[in-house]
Length: 248
Image 1 (cartoon, rainbow, N blue to C red):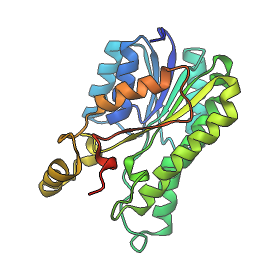
Image 2: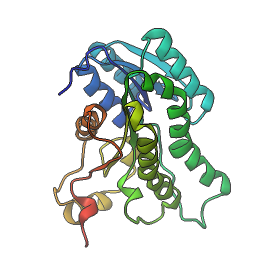
Image 3: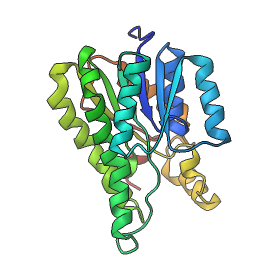
């Protein structure tokens, strides 16, 4: 593994769930962190304390879909650390509903959160990443690879990310910028807390060959490999216990 001590990572959605787990995995390897999140509660404060016990951390609150927040992230990273080596676009959230259930505003909001936020982040930090080369990671979902009931907006926005990553990887490879996507399946985070006991049983008995749900740490270790491997770009890696390969 490359030595990434004192490198710097910007992580949107970095105060909870998968984003915080990726931050912790990077922090254990000496990476300094600039994390973003929209709100604060006991979980967020506990995660920030955990990250600060591992490494140097700067918090920039705000909505990652706002281009002004993306610019503040870039400016804060430059002011505090003087460089950016990695970025993770982990901000997200559910977008439930069939097309007949969704308002136009809900449809557009899904794009703001999951696609436009990635656009704004990459544009804001591109110059810093291009100085030394580095890794940019998008957090997708297996919902963007296979059809699922009742989540049309979420599936469409997550389905856009692999091609988004390939386009950026092709355009910016000569600058040493590597762009990849990780596609989690059912991961034990706040996102899946509403799952019913019946759905849990069905997933474990029928849908997931490994017969368990994933953890944020499962996603984080693979994410760090995609961020740091110097010869991987434009790729999509699925972390779902084999769920998306099933025919029945």
